[in-house]
Image (cartoon, rainbow, N blue to C red; front, side, top):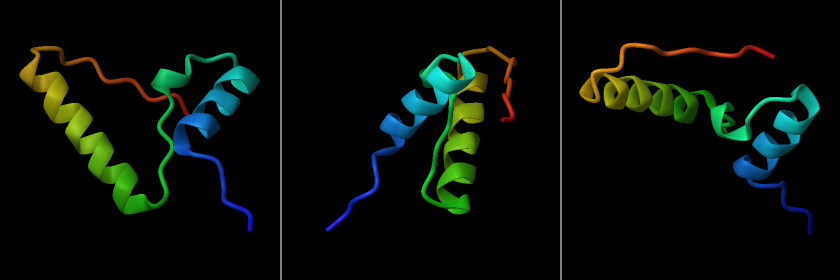
Length: 58
């Protein structure tokens, strides 16, 4: 049986391909998971008084 690689593994693969830090790449299993992670990231950055939020679009 085949199991797809984890999101971290995919982020590392994409990061090496695009020469980006894999920690800055968001990979999700569905749109709800991605939206949830984006909103949490924005909330956490606002709580840390850092208003900078950058997306890299592949």
